Amino acid sequence: MMNRGTWILILAGIFIFQTISICTAAEKSDDEKVVPKDEEDNEIDVQIEEEKDEKKEEDGAKKKDGEEKKGDKEDDEELPKTIRIGDKDIPIERADRTVTAEVTMEISFGSESMGNVTFGLFGRQCPKTVRNFVTLANPVRPKGEGYKGSKIHRIVKGFAVQGGDFMNNDGSGGWSIYGKYFRDENFAINHFPFCLSMANSGPNTNGSQFFVPVIRTSWLDGKHVVFGQVTSGHKLIKSMNDIRVNRFGRPYRQVWVSDTWTKFMKVGPAKSEL
Picture 1 (cartoon, rainbow, N blue to C red):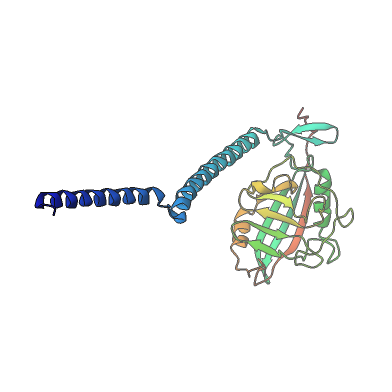
Picture 2 (cartoon, helix red, strand yellow; picture 1 turned 45 degrees about the vertical axis):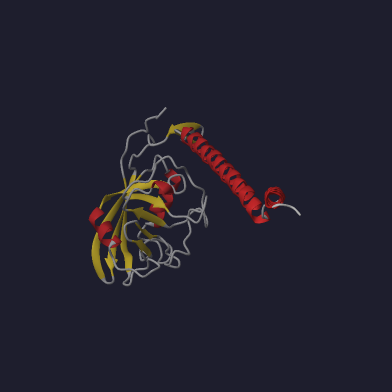
């Protein structure tokens, strides 16, 4: 029989063997462990999103830089300093503002006269447009063929008053002495408060309608022909601009041209601008 010491050695050997087996199995299990797919994808997705964000920021920076360069290019473009009139280049805003004729209109509110407005017309700069306006303002013209008796059909508070549609009195009619329309004569004079400008429905569609702005309307420069200015009656224009109107700008009470007068001025020979 084996003695007590032998049994102790055998049991110790078995214990050591089992311990080594367990540790080996644990190490093998750790080596074979598979990382969950979601965890792997999350790490890659974050990288992709970071790359997308970086690319997006880069594209945004390029776009912004391109827009800035485009804006700089537009800013660098100089506005035209002259305008071609006939066979001459006239410097813009050095055009001839000599008043060669005057037209006075009596403005009435209903049956009550509000007063007179007088326009000084730049006949040297815009002879054709001025001739049209003066002719239509002749008080002896038959009703419905001139400004006398026509309505101020549109009033926009803080902007302008408009009239000249002696045919329909709503902004849809009127005609010139040259035919239904005549061409834009020139845009040598920019708009300013209380100037007299031709209303139109697009390029070269001047007829009889006109408007008077009460503010600086620079966005209309190069689109409407300025051919005169208010020389008296500024307060009356302001009063007209404050009249109560509907949402279409039509006065609730009739505002109309109850009478007209024309006057030609004696002026000297024109001075060349060139």
